[in-house]
Length: 523
Image (tube, rainbow, N blue to C red; front, side, top):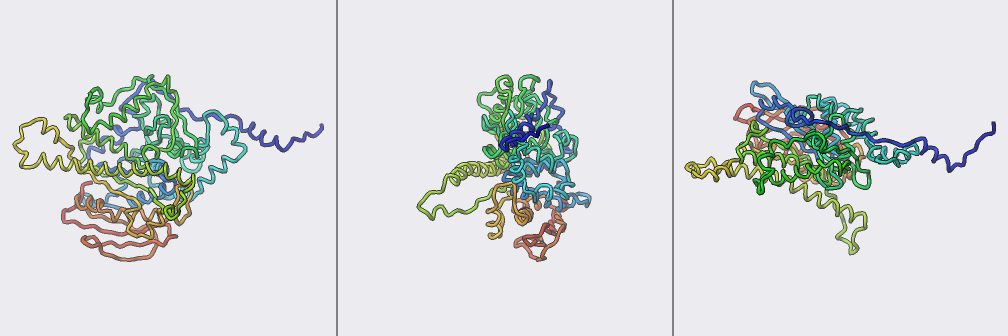
């Protein structure tokens, strides 16, 4: 037979054809919602929460590998930090965490911990943090055998990224695996490209789109949460809204048809109304999701909405799922970087790329700051309302409207801000601020981000207030190597022994005891 010689230009075409058309994963529909089932807060460890006095929430921000490493450092600190319980037993702070929210880079750490638990600490570094994930995505995009897939309808670069995330981190796990597990509730969030609204991977939201979250791979949630617009494609999910008899949440019923709902619930109701728009699955059969940082870069809106709902229900005299809580502890892990520029030293304005990045990032950064301040304002308002309601001057009040207005939740809110500006070491703070928002960092940067997270937690005045209020003995166990230094913190009876790591060391050592005359804690 005569040999067939193909022109070289046809070879890439053959690769494309051989790649064929790709089909994205379809989230399956449900025909009936069940508020008592599925991966949601209301059913997650509901009985165990009744025996706790604290609700502990971790909020992991976006920021690529920088965020993933920084949030991982907080998990390491909480793993190695114990409090002495009522019977003298030691309780790890990490085991007390109830909810972890994750956005973009932070969603990888949150989802991976929800899946693996303590097993993550032996694998996460090599499987994700130390990898050039960004380079691997680019390499796959440039591979001719993937070009046919990339040209397929509904299948873009984020689907290619999701495949990589499955291979290196999630191993085909779904939210069903999280639902069957014993870890905290994980809530990764993305942004609806059409409306700009926050989209949370939670069965309550999936009830509205009449779909089964348990069948959704964790890799697709991570891909959606980190799908930076333009750089990566939107992740598309199917919307079957209006086909499964969706039930309005019980908390919303006292307010949903009210012309002027109580102020604390107004924003939460608006969020609910934006979600209810998914009920029209006929005209909105698809939802296109991009990076969660576009709508909420620190994963705080869900927390704020929940607190506003809690306050509104208290004012209405309705029971809430958080009536048990004496303390609501929110650890905000914000990896926002603020690298310095020399723009103002030149008469010429910055270039197009620099201007676009700054214009896009400034509103997000400002919104992140306001979210933390809103949480602090809520804490201050509750404290003030309780102070007035319990004061001697108010003891003889006979006005029921005034009494209702002062009916605030009894829980004390602790806002622990873990962010670069809280780092006392200026040189180290400057170094962390220079780390880019990308999915590749040098090993030294990863190590220093992890170490910084624990240092900031330990130095946090709000964390120290929490420890003092619960009257605890805090023990932070050494887990690695480094140089030993000893110091005594001014104005405190806490002695701290810190093993300060060299920049290239992989572990931070902390050994600390916090003693209080109040006795052991009830966390």
